[in-house]
Image (cartoon, rainbow, N blue to C red):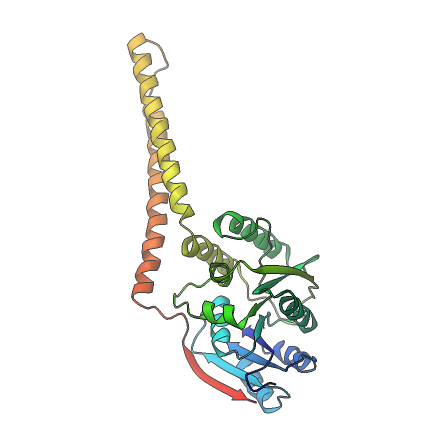
Length: 312
């Protein structure tokens, strides 16, 4: 480790990770990183013995380890930001707690970022060992971000990423309660790259990434970093209004010429349902924006750190 800090920081958000974090940390400790490396463990409100396991890892640490304990569960992206704030490395790599991102591959990300002078490098997989529904969710997320975020089309955004200390510091300045790490990174820099990496099977336990968390991620992607949904809502409203005017003109023409079918209660109710449903969707979308603004203005906490323990 240099006086200014280690060359590389490993940020690992934890949730019910008692069965997996020990072997992962031991593997990271054995890596040969020129300039030294450290580990930041962020326990995001785990309900198992994760905190006890982390404190034992501190006791037997072979490299500097920082253990940050959240007061409750705030979510993966919030935990990553907490880790960024405690990282001291010239580069920061964050990886999952389940062993599916091999630490040696994290070293390759770091080398690629350092050698290419890149602000951020994302790992992409030739084959993913996730469940089919999660692979589908990741694919949909990346397709949506192609036109919602300012990134190269088709560029794969994964949770296995290495960023420079500059980017980590800028991203960590975000105080909103609904962070989306990739959106924040792309607001800071476009000097990004990708590297194909291996993806291993889970070493133990079950994934904490649920459908509910995936839906929350989609909402953050759309609402926090783009006004595209509002523009689509405006466009849809204009198209429906134009369609309604055309329909009225056609009905008036048929009335004047004595043509056209008889119109009854069913067609009227169908039209009302279409328009009323569209209005509710638009109001719900606007309400989501206003709700998030309200929570941000009222300073809903992004995370609350209960304690910080460090060795090394």
